[in-house]
Length: 235
View 1 (tube, rainbow, N blue to C red):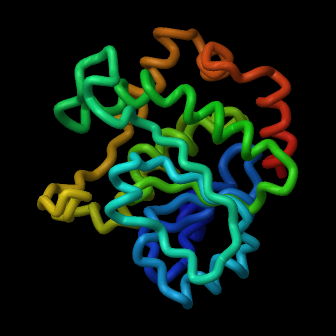
View 2 (tube, one colour):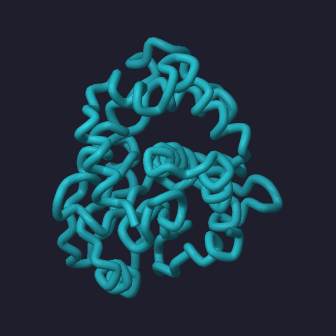
């Protein structure tokens, strides 16, 4: 498993943490990818994305992030869906805004339902694949979204977690936090992910809804939506 998952990384110049989300559960390889944003995508990177058959990009970032760091296309003609995982402003959420990474994951689960359902519907639609799901660096928001999709494709918790933790390798976080500039130009720390973080998101989902499908149903997904996703992405 480890060697197979490690081979998921693909070199796309100008894009961080790009890798195949397939090979986990019944999710087949070559149809769904995950990454950081495309705001520094190079022309060579665009050619490699074209070679992967890119047709859809699902961008989980906020509008403020999109305005500050717009994705580059270099004449690629894929469709882009903007499906923010988090509310645009703290006051738009009924729950307190997370103060740290530990608080972020249950918070994401509490706010991501509409984004997840919209992503699942698009990924289950004809003509969508191949697709890329990305946020800023492809670690937290992307991590939860891909984990939910993989869970619907029958992946075990252990395999989902192993794939999720590869972001530490992809982002150079194996030795701890690294600095980065956010959309305001302020220097912040990008922190490694851990199994406990993802577990806390799924714990919130199960505590509030009982299961991932029930959580998605509560946000408008039908069983036909979930079946279409499985059919479109299954090996």
